[in-house]
Amino acid sequence: MATCSDARVDLNAENIQFGTCIMEAAGVCGIDMGARGHIEGSSSPPELDNPGPDEFGELVSSCCGGEVRGETPGREDCQIDHLDGEMDPTADKSQDKKGLGKEVLLLMQALNTLSTPEEKLAALCKKYADLLEESRTMQKQVKVLQKKQSQVIKEKIHLQGEHSKAILARSKLESLCRELQRHNKTLKEENAQRSREYEEQRKEAMLHFQMTLNEIEAQMEQHNAQNTKLRQENMELVEKLKKLIEQYELREEHIDKVFKHKELEQQLLDAHLKRTAELMREVEEKQQREREFLLKDATESRHKCELMKEQEFQLKQQVSLYMDKFEEFQTTLAKSNEVFTTFRQEMEKMTKKIKKLEKETTLWRTKWETNNQALLQMAEEKALRDKHYKALQGKLERLEKLCRALQKERNDLNQKLGVLQGTTRAFKGLFVWKQIHVAMLTSQHEVASLIHTHTHTHPPTLEL
Image (tube, rainbow, N blue to C red; front, side, top):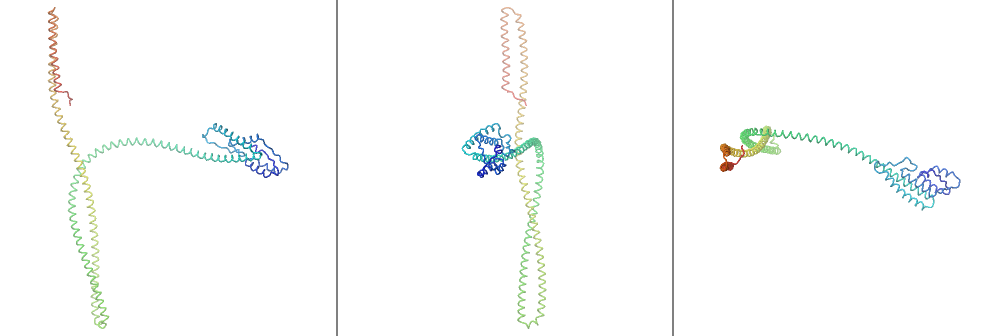
């Protein structure tokens, strides 16, 4: 669009409106707005340069080429920054060239349909404005993608750091696992030692437990006797309290009756005073005496009431104390019962364990006795076999002596046979050889029969 920016259009005064539209479109396309001064100041007739189709083709190719390079006319500094490593530049260029060729052909066909060059220029400007908007949207998208790429790179770095941390943690965990395995081995050894010590302690605890059980049973018997005594005392105290409460209620009823009686007497006296005004003077001394007597009685009765109230308060305090003692006694009884139940459970467990151990000891004793019997039998059998072996050794020695004697006789006979001559010599030699052969066979049969009888009667056994 450099050619559009350098071109100056001289328009007629009659076509001012059309010229203004073209100038606005040219302002969008980057046309030099300084041409407006020439348009307004010029009085010369309009000289319209009618561009041909070749010039329009160059215009379109220059526009499209600027768009492909990422440049906007009038804004040469703005370029699209492609993402690193997203697309292959050679393949993208070849595809862009093919697409641009098709778009240029379509644009040329659309421009050829228009009749006037002004319409063609307006269509080009509209196309350029659309391309500008598309380029701006693409730039915004590219910026958004660049931001996303930076975020992804940061996340990648963060994940790599986490991965390295995880590898370090894994190595630490492996070392910790090895240490734990070593620690487990040591713990197993310690547990074995502790189990041995625990068995020894258990035996000691059994003895101590039996002693403590005997002591606890004695204490329980003492506590039971004390508990029975305390229960009897509590029952007696309860009965005494009931009696005191009944007496107090009776006294209160008596006092109420006395007060009511006195009130009735006062009412009667008032009535008599009203009715007998003349007798009042005579009876004033008597009334004063009676009043003093009544006041004394009232003071005494009040004093008695106060004393009774104090006694009641003291008795209530005693009752509260006895109740507290009774609650403490109940708590101690509950604790002792719990301790006794726990000791009982432990005793039952220990009795079960003792029974199991007794069964195991009986089994081991039976096994030991059977093994001892087997050992005794084996020892007896060994002694018998030793005797038999000695007898066989004596027989073997005798046989060896017989064999040696036979060998000597054979040697002597061989010498004698060497001395003999002729047919008699040969005949006698054959006869002697037959006798020797028969003697050897008989001796071999005897040895074989002895060995056979020994093997059948006493089979070979392992010595203990």
